[in-house]
Length: 229
Length: 235
Image (cartoon, rainbow over all chains, first blue to last red; front, side):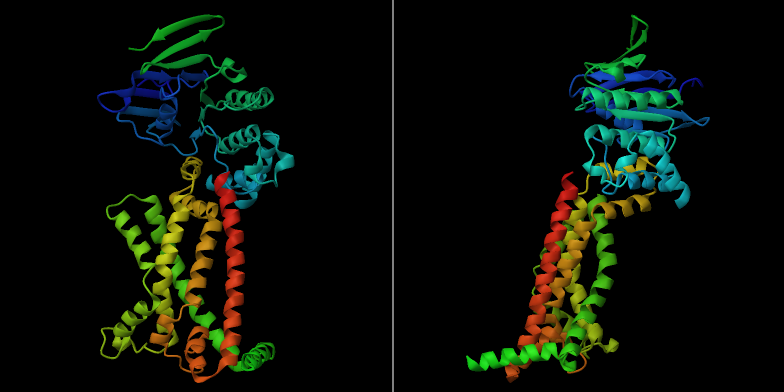
């Protein structure tokens, strides 16, 4: 195993043995480049992200994350966090959604509140702190979900179609937060149908075509493509 | 008709003047049913959580069993318990027949299936993303389960309110294992059923009014909780 990699996938496949959804023989990711996962509807993007998060088990193969000098199989709570296409908001206030995560992270009550306040400011929802989280708009929900995840200082964020159903302004706001996370050393892997500010930020592309994952590295305007398998 | 009006007038008088006998009877009803609920809620929650979250063999059988037991007539529960607790019965040594604990056990038996079935359907309805989100954000199993209960709080409260309403209004089991003993096991429903036969209309009407008011309050509460529950599930 190469120690510069953060993710290693070996012989991974999912679906029925006779007709797998997709197969990935070998794939590594250093975590330094943001990745844009592409594919048609039903190509298995969500399934791949969920397997990487450890929410689903693959039919075959292995996923390993290198976190804090050790190779770990998912799930890695608090370190590899997956956000659903429409992130789940707990049925409490915006502030308490952050507070819950802080408490689960093991912070004492006063520290948790302090952290929650900091993250509220970070995602620009200070005014909505007392509002019910479920009354937020789509863009605000995603910002809150990013803040709630970032509160745990994860190494990896897996974002499932974060820009679906968001308008340009909301995408720009989310993009600013994701850029911040990426700059602070959080590895980001996102799936998206359409290109946007957020996908333009990705320097690596994984495309699921006919059950095969094709990887390309985008270097400035030149695109070098390497097909796996 | 004049007799009925007179009884109603007497009934209101009993209620307003806080007649000690009347309120003692009401007290027995509440004490017994609250104790039954107190002992029913924790195991019912655990069973419902297991049925909703775990996939084990016999799961559907248990769910069907809970649904079937909901339909068992209260008097049949009373009969079975009576036979178990009677002197010659297998639990006769406990000396519980015609006591408040026996009534509470009967109501516990009546509350359990209803609680389990309602809690199960509430907990089953929780979004799978809630569990996944909590776990990936570092919540342990216990903390994540606690959060699920928090997400389903309106449904959980609705199940508790509905079950309490059922057992405090039941008469079959209470009369069989309680025996309607004055100052001891006489509760609202057994008093209405048995004292009315002796011509004590006023007390019956007064107690019936209390039950009706309670039913009204519980149903208003249920309606509110249902509304909130649906609101929180739908978003």
